[in-house]
Image (cartoon, rainbow, N blue to C red; front, side):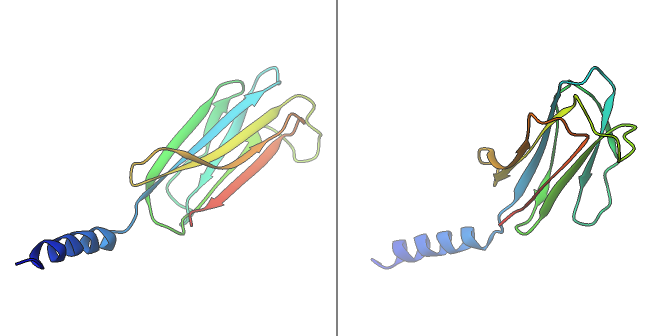
Length: 130
C-alpha cells in the first residue's frame, strides 16, 4: 500500500513529460525617423507558405503572433522600405525588430533583437527555438 502513492506520482510526472512543448512566436517591429511611407514585412514560416507580405505604415508599431510551433522552428522576419531600389542609401528610416517566444503559454521571453539608430532600408532577424 505504501508504494501506491509514489507510483501514482511517478506516472503523473511521466505522463506530463510525454507531452511535447508548444511554443508561440511573437514578431515585433518599430520604425522611426522617416517622413512617411510604408515598410514591407515578410514573416517567413519554416514551410515558406502561409503568410502574405504585410504593409505597415512607417512610425506605427506592429506585431504578429503565430503558433503553436514545435522545438526547432526557425522564426525569421525581413523588413524592407517600400519602393527601395536596393542601391540608394537610406538617410532617415530606423528599424527595430524583435522575436519573442512563449513556451506552453508561459511568459514572453525576448530571444532576438535587431535595432539600430543608424538609418537603413532593410533588416533581417532570425531565431531557432531550442
